[in-house]
Image 1 (tube, rainbow, N blue to C red):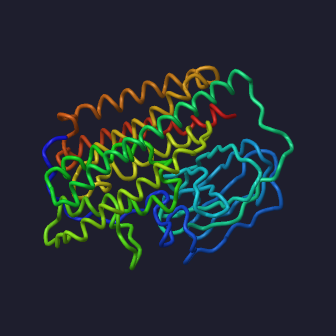
Image 2: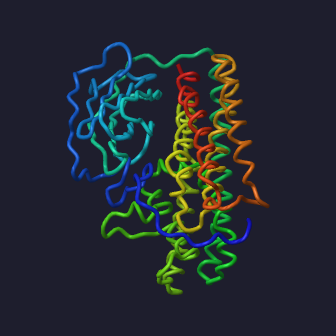
Length: 400
C-alpha cells in the first residue's frame, strides 16, 4: 500500500447500505419497522408473467401475495420521485435472498430469483433509507422442480462451486489479515494499521453481497458513522478508520477503546468465517450478487462516501469490480450457450472499466480518491453505468 492517506472531513450522510441496520432496525433486514406501513394490496395468487411491484414514496404495491416455486421474476417500477430499492428477504426479515438497487424515478428493473416453497418478505425502500415498506410473500409448492438441460445444470453447479470456493478463500484471507490489523491497531501502531487498512478490506469488499446476507454481522463490521441510528453502538472497520485518519477536532480513542474495537473486529470476522463455511449459493445468487457489487461501486465508491477519512475508495472500487467479474466469469460457460452476445458485451465492458481504473494504480494500491479530478470521477461513473445495464440481465440469462 502507498503512503498513509490524508485525513478527511466527515461525509454527508447517504442511504444505509445493504443489510446495514440489523440490530438497531437495519436497512434491508430490520426487525423493527418504525415509520413503515404495509401498503401492498395483493391478490391471492400470482397470474402468468412477472410479479409487478410499484414503489412510491409511501407505498410498495406488490401485485400478488404468493407465487408458485421456481424461477420468479419481480418487475419493479419506481412510480415515486426518489431513487428506490426492492428486496426479497427470508421470513425472518434478516437474510437477503435477492435485491435490486438504484431504481431511479420512472425506471423499471427486473429481479429474477429461483425460490423454493416457503415464507418470504418483500420490501421497497424509497430514498434508499430506513427500514423499508414491507409485506409478507408466500412461495407455494408448484409440485414441479425447476428443470434445465443436464449439461447447463452441470455448468451452473460448477459455477456455484467455484464461487463458493472463492468466498471461502476470501474470508480466510480476511480473517488472517484482520487479526494482523487488529493487533497493530490495539497496540497503537498507527503507521502499521494505516498501511494494512485498505488492503485488508479488499477481501471484505470482494464478497460484500455474501457478507451482507448475514444481516446481524454486516452492521457490526461495516457500518458507517453516517448510517448510525441514535444510541446505536459503532464498531467495525469505519470506526477504526476514523481513529486512524482523524478529521479536525477529533478526540482519539483511549488504549482501552482501541483494544475493544480490535477485539470485536476479530470476533465478528471469525463469526463471518464460520458462517461462510456452510454458505449455499445458486446461479441466481451469483448473477444478482454481481450486480449488487457494481451497485455498491455506484452508490458508495464513485461518490467517495465509503472511505470518508482514509480516501481509500479505489481499493474498495477494485475489490467490488473483482467480485462482480469473477461471478460473471464463473457463469460465463452458461452464458456462452444461452446468450453469447451478452457474454461478449460484458467482457468488453468489464475490460473497459478495468483499463480506466488501472490508470490510478500506484505501487500495490491506488492514488487516494480525493486526488482525482471531477472529470476523472465522471469517467469512472460513466463506465460503471455502462457495465451496470447489461450486467442487470445476467441473472435472467443464466437462469431462465
